[in-house]
Length: 127
Image 1 (cartoon, rainbow, N blue to C red):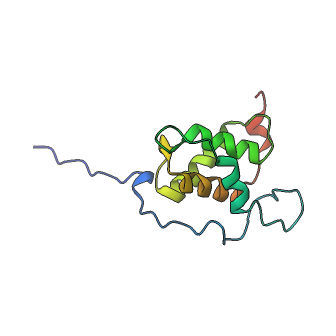
Image 2 (cartoon, rainbow, N blue to C red):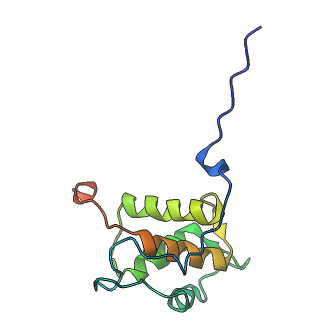
């Protein structure tokens, strides 16, 4: 009789310790382009999500990506941007979900904005 294979936890099974997104220091590129910029504040991000909920009151993941793109005033985004939004979602709610509560969507965009390092140039070649 073969031994059962161990089940390894996936990245999404890690315990969620919700970061206090709005009080952590920004470690990414300045949102405004000014050194020392703390990034957007929660009220600005909440305003961008206003009216973007689905009929069930939740915000689809694609809308979180879109609002985050708009906040950063990008015309288009590459796969690396999507990966970083997904990483912020995992850190805020424990997984990338089809949709989020509004407060979670706001915090995902906020955490992304605190950490965004920009796209490495080679990742966007040919995009």
